[in-house]
Length: 502
Image (cartoon, rainbow, N blue to C red; front, side, top):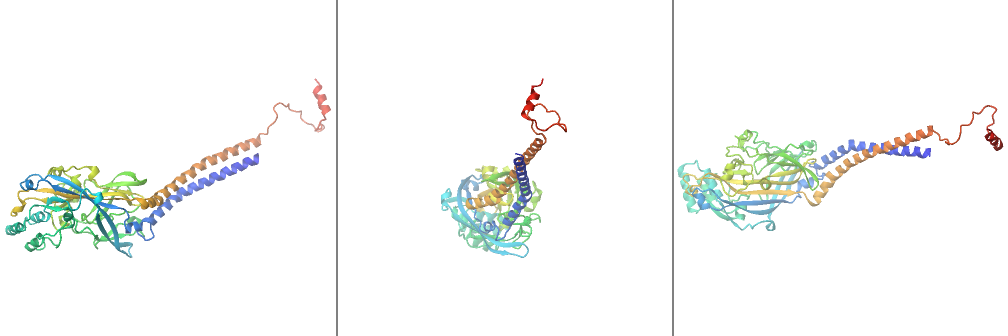
């Protein structure tokens, strides 16, 4: 019995110590292993798990475009408030891939990223051949751009516009507005004011978007410093752009907008957007989960498109109008173009009330990024922007009629995508499930060690107590002490006689 107890004490004790050691090791080494795996697999290196995801983005991206049709063009020419009707969405499947990938000696890599867009009629509410009444963007834009030119130049332009039968509003197909149409007005304007519109051929709002690249990016690989991975070193060879009026606004900050450095804190993130011609900062809103993967949600602050009066750091983006829109004329051929959130969400109510038909709300019109904080990889995102044209009556150009000054929405689009399928499964297994399992096991081992060690201690204590206290029959009387002459054994007769004596 004693041997069995000693074996139990030894077994429970060794098992408890082993569990404590395993749990302690996992507690100390587990986070190091996980961190090493994350660092190894998120840096820009052909051997990392995320490299192919970075090179040829496997996430199905979709661009949904909504147009604002002008319902009362004749009345607007007479000074009435524009009445708008949202049309769409017209949905395009977007493919992104990188070419000219060149690893440099200074821990950076250079590349060109191309976009291809394919119309998806099955996901759209309408076809590309539908007609929509919108402002004559070329004519109205050129009119505002020529407002301060001599009167005779404007008179010549107005005469040319009449000869070309150009009007303030046009009725064109979705395909033409997006991907371009031939317009003799381009050559006419360039003849009257050389260089005013420095391009030839078709004009379309997205004509330079399909099958084109977003410029030469050079970003850090993270091979030497993981905290710099994906951070932009230069864009088209520039450390700063020269579109804006302050050094701060011209800075190229953050990443290229695809991934961020790992081990993120719930504060903010930045990226440089060639489409917006500027760096953009999003702020942390809340923590959540996407398909079981922990995420941080980042959203646009109200100050993103605020004017210089409401937010002085944005003064460099001016000349400004109301808060909620940003003048991008300096990077869009000086055309009076503005960007904003859809339906002027988070903008000055004056902009919303200047037209009819807008209904801004957070659920439909706010942009967001859901990022896995451990790896810096976006799980789910929807980037939304609206294009607006500033139109007004321009003296000397009769085609502008009596149009009152207004920032008129043209369209808004959402580029959305989320990780799914085998990519999501691989991501979840390697970067979520295994680290979680290691963390769970360390607490299981530590938890088991406590009862095992306690059990060993209890059994050991009982065993020692038993050895120190031997058992005696409770009914037997204590025999007299033995002397040197008393025999140790008595025969049965002698004992009987002793018992018989009174």
